[in-house]
Image (cartoon, rainbow, N blue to C red):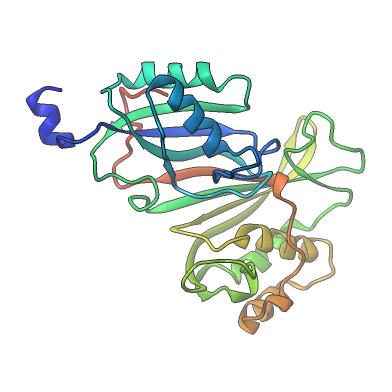
Length: 272
């Protein structure tokens, strides 16, 4: 490492940011588990093929079983100062045949942290509107066999945007210190796709509670189906009671779609 690099990154072990894409279907979630497959475990095993371990990587968020990643971000510390593109290529070689891919790698400062440096998380949720079973999208969407009123769903979603106590939309096993969060955006759109119409939810916040997005979607599906009024979402929010929440949407329609940092580590010139 030259003097310029030492000044920028520090003199410790080289730290790398990884942008990760994965199909969450075969996994018990992101977090490493002793007796079940995980995305974290798959990446750490691949790292051990490159350098002696043990390796412990940290991620921007811990997705649940069945939830997918379009642009999860993690970081790892290595002994060798790898060229980022070669690191991503080597990891992808050793990740086969798991449905996990490193789609970006970047050298970052030794105090950069995938979770704590992040300023925003972005989630996508997909509902496929058709009566026929999903084939090509099986495990990638929530199939609902009825039309949904997207305008009513957006009206309900508008009650959730802002700074609120989200106890109603928080899992009973959530470990967050406080249920108070700021939801920056919750946009609902209807998209005509090749496989049929989809309702897509685009959700942005600095951080989320456990099952918060899936609780939003399950509740808003009730609005779209005409079983709740849009204003009922505001009533449920104000109740601050988990029992007031609608059903929790299944995990397979949910994607961690992006993580935002003050300075994008995957900017021009980095492995993608």
